[in-house]
View 1 (tube, one colour):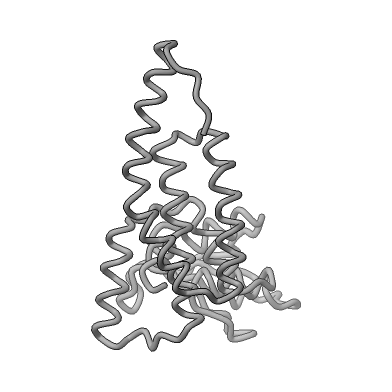
View 2: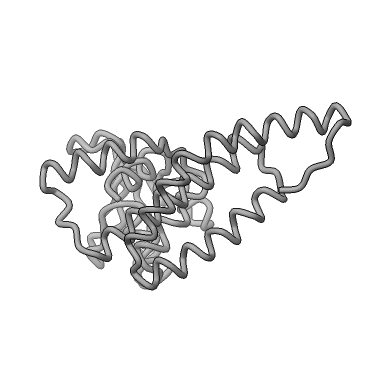
Length: 207
């Protein structure tokens, strides 16, 4: 979870997110950007401050509203502004965030060795769910060049994985991820070979 959130915060910015929502800054104060708070009403004197990367040593943008006291990351902002869960926020932003699967695994193992995770059953479910999702999305976006048929296959597959996650079947999720981690690389190779043969007119294939 820490790795995935870290990648989101490095690649996504609060200012870009607010711009996408049609929310413009009111003024600049040094390297800080100030807004009328989008979370609470009646903020006529801008009290919502976005701090730049590097502020207090952080590697991502942060914010704080001096009116409603909300803060501090992009994920917190989306949760408060859209009344969605943290998990929904993470899934939303992960759609186009680059995830290195091996780095994600190494990060989880490192945190576990430092006793930083405090793993409970639901936490393990979240970890495997994120890893499975990221692995599938990476495969579709990078290996398959956004092929619609391949993407549809993985969408249906991920729906089934969500059902398993809701049942808190950690052991099954772990097994699925193990197969994916080994299988996607082989699937990448097979996919590319089939595409080459198809383009040469020697094979009409279906996934």
